[in-house]
Structure formats: C-alpha cells, structure tokens
Length: 549
Ligand code: SPV
Ligand code: MG
Image (cartoon, rainbow, N blue to C red; front, side, top):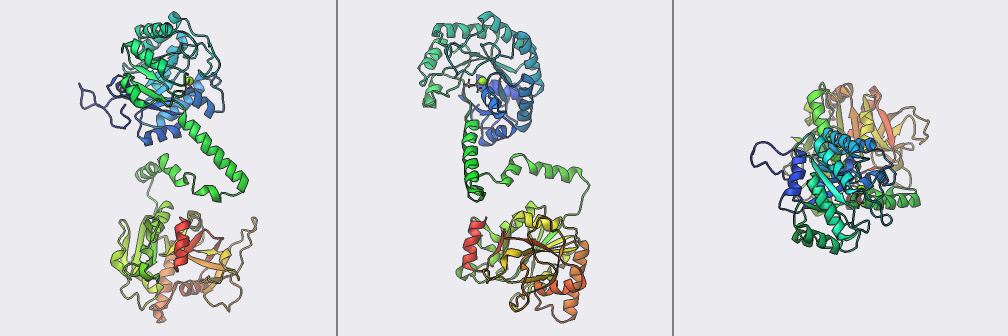
C-alpha cells in the first residue's frame, strides 16, 4: 500500500480491479512499505480515505473506546461487526480488522471470518491471547494461548474464508508478555506454517531494537506488520530497510479527536457561547461534503419526480463607490477572502437549493462573469433604478423566485426561512438594525407588528412600507435586501412592475417603492431576524465582510 489511493491491477487480468482483500494482500505482499491508518467508525474511515491512505486498521482499542467501553471484549463481537459494517460502507478502502483473540476458540474464529467476508472486510488480525483479552499496554506477563490451540484458530479461519484473497494476520504477543525472542520467533513460525498470511510482531518498548532483531532473525519468511505506538520516534526509513511489509498507525485519529473535542467542550462551557470555536471547528457544510450529500442530491435528480426549484435574481448593476476597489469591477465582484461577494452569494443560494441564478449586470459588466450564472444587462444602469434592472430579468420571474441585492451576505437560515414560508411574498427584516445605536440603517421597514423576540409570539407581521425617511414612525427593522415570491407572488411582481411603468416610474423606482406599493394591494409578509447578515457599502463594511465568512 503506497499511501495513495491508486488501485493496483492484477497482472493476469488487467481488466478486473482487485477486490478489497486483493488490495490488502497486495499491500502486504508487495515490495513497498504499506501503511494502515486507524479508524473506529464510518466517519473516521472516510477521513482515512480522504487523507489518501490505501488501507484502514479497524482498531479494537479505538472502536471500544468510541463506544465508551474498555478494550477488554466488553463490546460483543456482533456489536463490533455492526461498527465494521458502517466503516465498510463508508469507504472503498480495504479494512484489516483487529479481531482480538478471535472472540473464543477455533469455532468462534470460523464464524467471525465468514461474517467479516460478508461485510466486505478485507482481512482480520487475531492475537495469541485468551478471551476476554486485555490491551497489550496494560500490565505485564499477560497469559498467552497454547501454540497448537492458536494454530487451530488460524487454520479454522483460513478454511472458512469465502474469498482466496481474504487476509489472516497472526499477531505474536510474546514480546509484549515478557517472553523470549526465541519464543516469539517460534510462535511466528508456527503461525506461518498454520497458514497465516502475515505476522504482526508487537512490542511495547520505547525503541524498536527488539522489532529489528525479530526482523533480522525472521529472514522474510512471511510479511511482517508492526504497530509502532510506543517506539513512535523510530524513523520510518528504518522500517523500510528492515524489510517490514506494513506499518499500522493504530490509534491516532481517536486520540486526536479526543484532544479536539475536549478543547471545544472546555471553550464552549467557559464562554457559554459558540463565538470562539466557530471558525476552528469543521463546518456543517464540511460534514455534508464528507458524508456525500452531493451524491444524494444527484440521486434525487435521477429518482424523484421533478419539483420546480426556486430561481434567484441578483441585482448587481450599480457600481458602488469603494474607490480603487470598484474602479474596474462592480462591488459584487470585490474579493472577500478569496471569493467575490457574488460568488459567496451564489454559494449561499446554492446551499439552499437555488442553482438557477440570473445576475443583472450594468457597471463594468464584463467583470461579472462567474461560471454557472446567467446574466442580463441593464446598460442604462447609470440613469435607472433597481426596478428597471429587475425588469430586465423578467424571464426569471416565472414560478418561485428570490430577489437579492448583489452586495449582501447572509447566513443560510435566513434564506431557508423565507423559502419555507407559506406566504406569497416574504421579506427578510433585521429587527436589530434600527434604533439610535444604528444610525446607518437604510430601507427602514414599517410593519403592522414589531419584532418581540418572544418565543411564543408567532403571529405574522406584514409590511406597511419601506422608506429611508427618518421622520417616519419608529421603524420595525431594516430590509436585508432579500425577498422571496411564490409563483403567485412572482405574478404580483410582474403586475407591479407593469403598474410602475404605466405610472411613468419604471426608470427611477427602487425596490422599497415596489414593495411598498405591492403591500398596499397584497399581503407582504415580514420575517424578522436579528443580525446574521450584512451589506457592503463602505470600506468598513468590506472589512466586516472579510470577518463574516
Ligand atoms: C488496537 O489498536 O486495538 C491494537 C493495537 O490492538 S494495541 O492497542 O497496540 O494493542
Ligand atoms: Mg486491539
């Protein structure tokens, strides 16, 4: 196993890729030093594969610990089998299972090997101790199995494997148990003769001297596997030179996750807040990515009856005035930590299932050219307003549609909440953006009910008007620049644009005017939020945006 996911091919049959057992066998019998990385559940198995390893060690210690149990056969073997099934399903890699002692005598090993084969497991390692086992790093002089009896377990396992390639590794615990090197070699030889495909020679010393002595005297009679947990400082090159077949990194994903989980738990407990940890932990999106949500979406497109998806219109025709930054591009194309505002907006829309996005361009329109986005142009952007831009995208105003300003960033839950609303028109309003402390708020919303923040208060609020007149009665919030229209709402939108045109206002009208007029004829639902969004009007906003993502 070369540490990459390259799949070796059978020499005799170039067309057929190797089975997982074949891959494990190739790793152990091939000329290259192989590496097996520990995993203890489906997620960690995926992380091993993602890292580029070619094989997995399903550790008894870490599977037990992740179940909150001791490495003393406290989990029954069928419970371990259940975990292995998740791991096997989660990855394409070959898995070498730590089968402890085989969970009993030869008879238990027979059944274990059959069941592992059925679950797509590539091989099993059994150790020459007695059931129930104790972890090798606990205590001294652990009792060992009689050599003949353990050979019977190996033979029974080999006679029970359904596939020729299934790998049985025999683990010699003699050095762990304080027995002599001669005994370790005698045991290794007996297990090889009984049919073991490889020998795992285990040591708990802090240097690899006894491992190298074993290797020398073993003289390559069968592949050797090692677990350098305690002699971790030994350079890997020395293992290569010693002719070792494979190295098992036995428990480091569980140990590293314990460190990370403790730190996160401690911080959240101390802070009573998620603020500090948010940027330091894997994102929820990362979870979706790792467990393959994209594949499910693809399958849904194949197998579910098609449901019309909402579209989006992004109003991005105006240039914005951010000095040099907007000299050759509109505001929506300014970089915010490696991605433009527009790209971030498109990603947020995409995360809520909106892929059909029409951007209305105007200022420096050539600079707005993101793949996958449709564009329409408002070439008279300098003398017209937002509704004129919106009207340019009338083709996208059939069925459910979201209208967003091109200079906003917002958290997904805001959009998801608009999308799940039963109302025909619903707008996102930030109730925390108004008041004396927030003099910069624009697009001030007057509604028939203010935001209360009361959990039990779920009576809907409706728009009365949006304007920028500070003299109007106490506003209920600031319009975020995000609105959703059902198919009926989109019809109202087209009608309102036509009415503005009839009134000679199409050139100059902005979105607040359109929504205010619409609210006079139809219910326009207000959804209150507090924060979790921003728009970029100034260099200060831009600095904030760079922290927002
Ligand atoms: C395991 O990972 O469970 C092992 C290796 O058996 S050790 O903990 O070193 O015994
Ligand atoms: Mg173990």
